Every structure is written in C-alpha cells, then in structure tokens.
Amino acid sequence: MHVGIIGGASTIGSTLAYGLVCDDPHNSVTLFEAALDAAWGHATDLRHASYHLAGGPRSAAEAAPGEVTYAPTEDIGEYDLDAVVVTARVPPSADDTQRGSRGARTRELDANLPLIDGIADSLDAIDPVPTVVVTNPVDRIVYRLWSRLGWPRSKVMGFSLAETARVADAIARRHGVHPTRVSCPTMGEHGERVVPVFSRATVAGEAVPFTPAERDEIVDEVLEIPFEIAEKRGIADSSRWVSGAGLLRVLRGLSSPGATDPLCLSVPLDGEYGFTDACLSVPVTLAEGGIDRTIEWDLDEWESARLREAYDAVREDVRRFED
Ligand SMILES: NC(=O)c1ccc[n+]([C@@H]2O[C@H](COP(=O)([O-])OP(=O)(O)OC[C@H]3O[C@@H](n4cnc5c(N)ncnc54)[C@H](O)[C@@H]3O)[C@@H](O)[C@H]2O)c1
Ligand SMILES: O=C(O)C[C@H](O)C(=O)O
Image 1: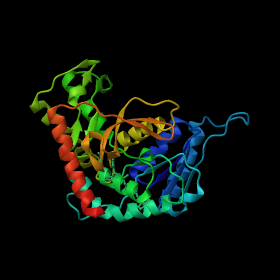
Image 2 (image 1 turned 180 degrees about the horizontal axis):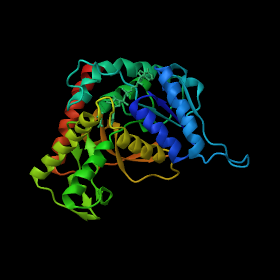
Image 3 (image 1 turned 90 degrees about the vertical axis):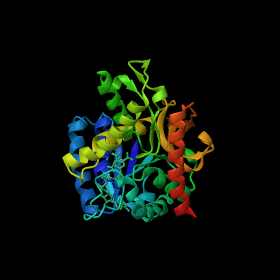
C-alpha cells in the first residue's frame, strides 16, 4: 500500500514509516512535511534501509520494492495514496513546564486546531481515503478534521491503541502472564477519561474480576506511564514504539480483504452509545477502504459512567470550537 504520512518527519511519523518498510518492502511511503530538510533526511535514510529490508540486490524478475519519498503537505493532491496518517503538530513551547505531564494532550488543542484546518484544506485535493489521526488531543482533532473535510464517517478515525497495550501490560503484571495473553479493550477519551472495558477483560482466555480499587489503580498507571517514559527517555521522544506498532496494525486492517476483529478507534459518533457530534474511541471493525462496522457493546455501570464523562468533556470542547 502507499501511505502518506502528514508530519512524516515527526517522532511518530518517522517510526511508522520505518515500520511500514520493515513490515512489507512493497509498501510505499510519502512523508508530507513542513520541515522539508528533516523529511529529506528521513526519506533518504529509509530508502537506504529498504535496500536491506527488501534483501537487495534483487533480480529484475522480482517485484520492485516500494518507494520512500517526501513532499510539502500542500502537494498531497499529486499523489495516489491508499491511506493517510496525520501526526503533524505545533511543537510545544520550550517554556511550557507542563508539556511532559498528564494534561499535556489537551494543552495542544488550541495550537493544533489551525494546523489541522490547513491540513484539511490540503486533503480537499484528494478523494476520500482512510485517514488515521494521531495528533493530540486526538478525539477533538479527529472530529475537527472530519467536520472540515465532510468525508464519510467510514474514512476518518483517531488512534488510541497505545492505551490498549498499556492496560494489557498493567493487567499482565498483576497476573504474572505475558501481555499478549490479556484482552481488555479501551474506549472513551484518549487520555484522562480512558475507559478500559474491564467487564470484557480476559486473561489466558478466562474472564477476570477487578475490584473498584484495582480499576482505579490500573487507570492511574496507564495515564502516568507515557509521561514517566518521556521523563526518563527525554521529552522530545514521544511514545514512538507502541504508537508506530499500533498504527501499523490499523493500516494492515485497512488493507485487509475481510473485516478485522473489533479494535477501538476514535470515530465520529452518530447515535452510538447515545452520543452524537463528538468523537470517542469505540469498537470498530476495519476492512479495505475504511471502517467496516461500529459495534455497541453492553457496558457495566462504571464503564457507562466513565464513557459519559469522556463524551461530556470532548463535546464541551467541540461545542466551544465549532460554534
Ligand atoms: N494518539 C496517540 O496515541 C498519540 C501517541 C503519541 C503522540 N501523539 C501525538 O502525535 C503528535 C505528534 O507527536 P510527535 O512527537 O511525533 O511530533 P513531533 O513534535 O516529533 O513532530 C511534529 C512534526 O509535525 C510537522 N509539521 C508541522 N506542521 C506541519 C504541516 N502543516 N504539514 C506537515 N508536517 C507538519 C513538524 O515539522 C514536525 O516534524 C502530537 O500531537 C502528539 O501528542 C498521539
Ligand atoms: O506523547 C504524548 O503526547 C502522549 C500520547 O498521547 C500517548 O498516549 O503516548
């Protein structure tokens, strides 16, 4: 597939680009950027990487590997893309002392809204393709992009799967199993009002109970961990590995011939769970071309109440910037 990454030189964008080339050397990637020198640097380095990943030297009889290129975002209309990922952002100011702590995501909102409007103007030049937004605060930003584009709901989605992996990790440590033995989807807001769906959680295929205190403890851990990682590793280095890997999973789903298993992404709601005019992470299945189906699970009281809080918080911001 040919994936256009807007903000292709970003931490998350460049990591995803590498993941796409590793995953399948026939993938093509175009890095759309404002910082063209950085984009050139990543594209050139990735092209060199693809020599090894494609097992060069190859014979002329083998299918040619994909290309890694770069371009200004405004030129996106000249490219034939199968999917777009948006990771562009306005860099947080160096004197924002809170930029590496909880709440950092929503602090990006006012700066990123005009940036996203400019990206919507550039995307107007292409026919709708599946578009995955990573830019924070993702639920508000994906809503803004979707409302500016006027594309079908099935084409625009926000990425929040890092939290699913973090919840699995937190549960796995409590049960002494590998995280891949845990299933616990995460709905709601990406951030403070995330809703781990504990009522559907399984460990090694078996349902497990959680006390209210355990639920709160796991939520707290999941909210702290990206900022703890940033503090120890360096604030400029956002959660590149889990986000790059999760995005790869979404993109594989968007090129799969049949529908995927449900996974939670932030999508524009039109009555699902009783909510409209906002985006929240809810279970969807993906297929080639976009979202195949949005699913409504039965939630317990704690989950429903948290989902309502998430909706109220996102909706309040959407109302402020849309009205
Ligand atoms: N949803 C999630 O789970 C998740 C996870 C990690 C990070 N994030 C968010 O993703 C975003 C990206 O984070 P990062 O650390 O990778 O960013 P970064 O600061 O490393 O890079 C941002 C990039 O955007 C580019 N840019 C700015 N304007 C542009 C435009 N008009 N067109 C193209 N590129 C443009 C900049 O030149 C820069 O290269 C942030 O908003 C971050 O909070 C979300
Ligand atoms: O890097 C960030 O801004 C946090 C990000 O949303 C994450 O969940 O890793």
